[in-house]
View 1 (cartoon, rainbow, N blue to C red):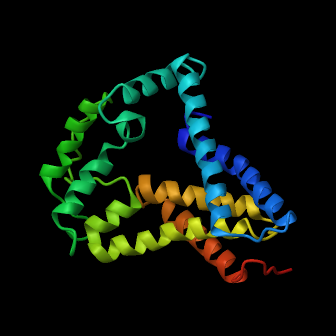
View 2: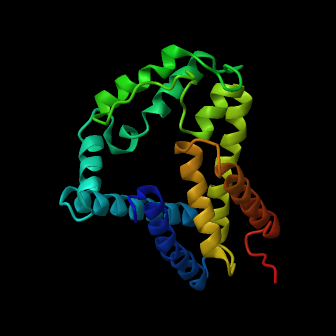
View 3: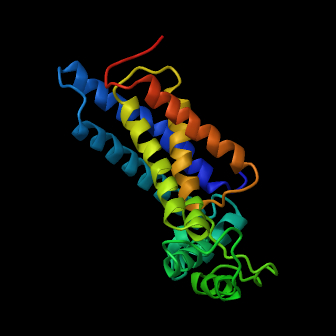
Length: 232
């Protein structure tokens, strides 16, 4: 809807998540306890669902089923050097380079450097995307919670968001072993958090929605500390 590819993919995965839960329940009904292998099977099913959603989008966009704007956007990003995923997020690559130049202490809050800011246009041209001039502020672009924190705060900022990334994986694995009424909401928050931590800038409404997702996942893990425990 209105070209929201990331959110549509997220909703597709959330809709596919009950399939992984059904697989886990079938194993338990046969007397097999929840296991790490079962969690891996669940994540594999989600990965297959994600690959299927991506292929459906590619076919639909390439054949004009999503409109001319979507077709042009898809063609521009998929025909470039970095592929569809990175083609529209070249700031991620620039931010990663900046982080690797100072991986321990970072470059400081609201770090500015014209060398990194000016690289975005070059990378977009290589990716086949529309090219615009760099921002006059010369802020180092990142387009990622993870990379942005690494650039700003160094290794400590990176470690924090890596820990945050562990929450969705742990929460989704825990959902496979319990009967939680709001499991679809938790799955939606978990999958969405993975996406934004990796590929979205941390600002504006994200400063409210991301902490909400983090707290919700922490609530789930604290409420169900054991594999088969449940609460009213």
